[in-house]
Amino acid sequence: MRISQLSAVSGVPIPTIKYYLREGLLPAGEQTSATRAEYGERHVRRLRLIRALLEVGRLPIAAIRKVLAAVDDETLSMHLVLGTAHYALAPAVEPHPDDEAWREARSEADRLIAELGWRIDAQAPTRDELAQVILTLSRLGMPATGEALRPYAEAAMELVMEHEIGTISLDRTREEAVETLVVGTVVHGRALDVLRRLAQESTSAQLFGISGT
Image 1: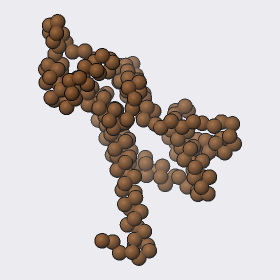
Image 2: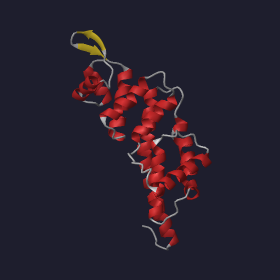
Image 3: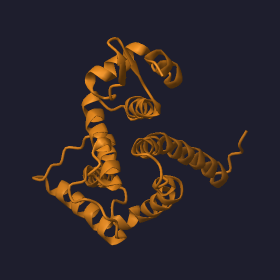
Image 4: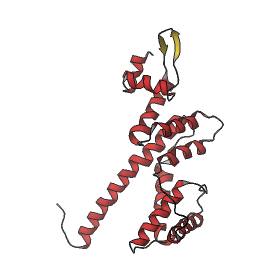
């Protein structure tokens, strides 16, 4: 297909496609003449992934380039490819190793992960994310131990296994697997948050005798 057809199929404007080509995010098409190239299904898949990373994941171009490089590196396992995408989505958390409260929170996070038997890289930014959550809860005077967070961890694992990572088919392309991960992490994460708040309102109405409408 020509670039105009690629634009129509993907929904990505031609100037944007040309920008992705210049930036090396989208592989070049097959040249059929000095001014014309042909594109195929792999370009459609790559554009879908770029849009997911950009519009859903809100990643900067530099982070998208890093994720795409992992997707294209056939020496990397699917686990490492998905890990690259996952870490790119993680919000920045600045560790404070000189702060005693931070060190305790990080130790509690590491302890919970170990007790759950989860295989998490020692340098995973999500460890610091969890430590930040524990530290915030502690400063607010709320339960901030691994035991208090265990029900959330167990619910998260069940959700991921049944509806997210566990549903990624082994015969999917690497682009499709990463796209599924991005959508599952960001969009389904938002859905879970909204449903939790709806459940909280409904439970509050039941417990405190306020009738719904």
